[in-house]
Image 1 (cartoon, one colour):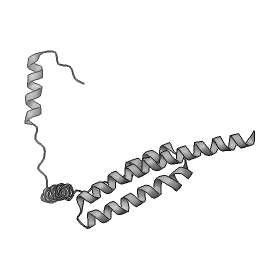
Image 2: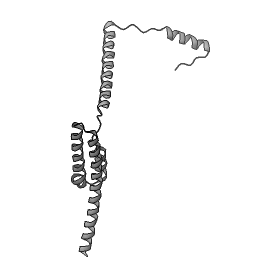
Image 3: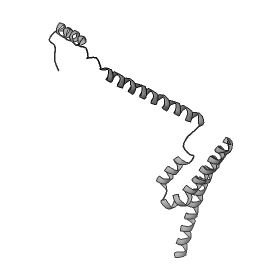
Length: 141
């Protein structure tokens, strides 16, 4: 890094740098840059169009997919295989059938019913597991 001792020296250096010109690009390089810019712009426009189209269509993640990932974290593999996954799979299947038939309100009802069924099933499983544990302990004594 160069330090200047006076303002005039710094000003003359700036003036000299401003006068330096890059050599012009060859025709082949200019054409290559134009093709790349055009390709990048076209890709950007197509991506934005697809995003807008998908938003208009209402494409989103399947209902229950977030709950499934949370359940995978919270519950054991056995609980997920026996209770969580079948309930969410049924809900997603019925939800997609209703959407395919064009019945949005039925799809919303199926989604709410599926969530209720999941929480009720998990609660019932927990209660039965607790009662079975109490029964086993009481019979051992």
